[in-house]
Image (cartoon, rainbow, N blue to C red; front, top):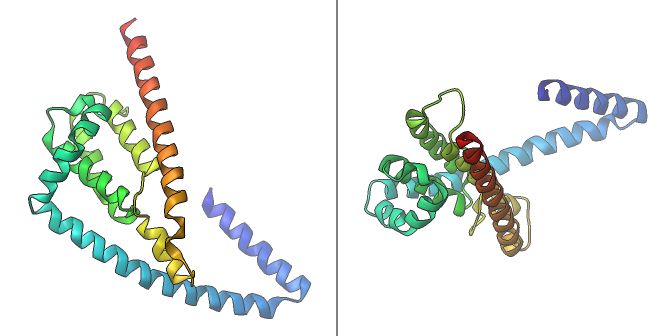
Length: 197
C-alpha cells in the first residue's frame, strides 16, 4: 500500500510545484531534507551504538540476572504461560529494558529473538500464543522512562530543551501500556473461557 501512496504524494508535490512556480523552492527543500536526514542518521547512529553496546555488555554479565530478578514478578504476571522458560524470560527482560530506555531500534532485534523462542513453545504454529500477543502489545505501547530516541531527534533538530518531553512521554506510554495490558488480559481471559465451553 505504501508503495502506491508515496509515489502519488511525490507526483502531486512535483506537479503542484511546477504549476505554482515553486520548482526552485522544491529543489532547495529536497537538498535541505537530504542534509537533515544525514545529520539525523549520524546523531541516531551514535546514540543507538552506545546503548546497544551497553545492552550487549549487560547480556554477558550478571546485570541481566539482576534485571531479570527485578522484572520477574512483572513477567510472571504478564506471561504466566512461560514460567518454566528461562530463556524466553531473559529475552523478554532485555526487550523490556531496551523499551524502557527508549531504544526502539535496539529493542526490535531483542523482541524478534524473544518471539522466535516463544514460537518454539507455541503448540499451534499458525496462530499467536497469548504470550506472543502480550509481547507485541508491550512493544507497541513501549513504556519509556528515558525516551533516548526522541531526545536524540529533538537534539539533532536544534531543540533548545530536548528533554522537556520526558514527563509527557511518561504519561502517554504508561497510559498506553496500562490500557493495552488490561484489554489484552481481558481478551485472553474471555478466549480461555470460550475454549473451555
